[in-house]
Length: 264
Ligand SMILES: C[S@@+](CC[C@H](N)C(=O)[O-])C[C@H]1O[C@@H](n2cnc3c(N)ncnc32)[C@H](O)[C@@H]1O
Image (cartoon, rainbow, N blue to C red; front, side, top):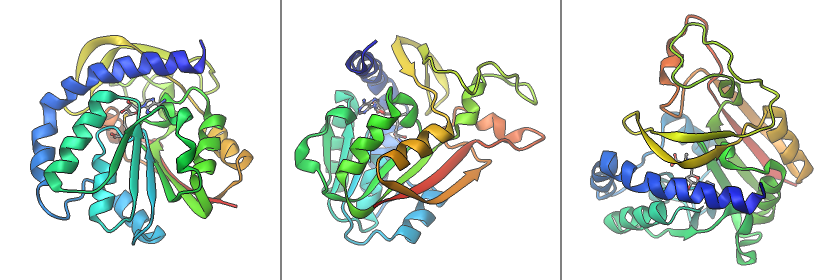
């Protein structure tokens, strides 16, 4: 399948996810964003943004979903904030949240691979989080876009699910879990039973394509695109909700990571 066909299919699946997620926690989010200065970011993200420094910085978030992380960054003192996502539904929800909190962020319905040239070299920070990398059919082209968006000496900050967990089924309750997929596989999973990660219910969906990228793929794609690794950390915490029960295994597993790379 061509990249655009994956995007088309994934847009459909995420547009279907929109109303499902909205029923779960959206009213809480609306209520929270009505409070001035509200931040949805977890402790790890908040600490890393303190290390990077946020004040007045221009930030782009790729695959921003309903923008809750980007709106939080704006509340914490960021400058110009622009979020990009393919889903019409989630971008619309993001506009509602921004309006509720009177927060000035641009949330743009766009395929990451097609982001307009007008955003080239506009950002100090590009932010990619939880469940975004796995939706990218072409990892090298993703970091080509990241590099294009960044000003010189700008940084990309990634906070993601560890690709190690792609080897297991999310609903595997055994300890240790059973290896189901090769770490070296190159075919996407086709998911037609989606998980609503707000309440862990599942529902039938149009097919969504989930791509496994090894850590070395992510790091190599950065290096190929003039992005030099500055920080890399691994955690035993699940950041996706989907693998939360893996945190209880008798031997800790790498469930998430953070990474910063700087544009040369
Ligand atoms: C798992 S969500 C989450 C990301 C965000 N960290 C969050 O927790 O809300 C992934 C998002 O990626 C978006 N997405 C998938 N493929 C995309 C593409 N090619 N361009 C832009 N957005 C994309 C989906 O619409 C979805 O909102």
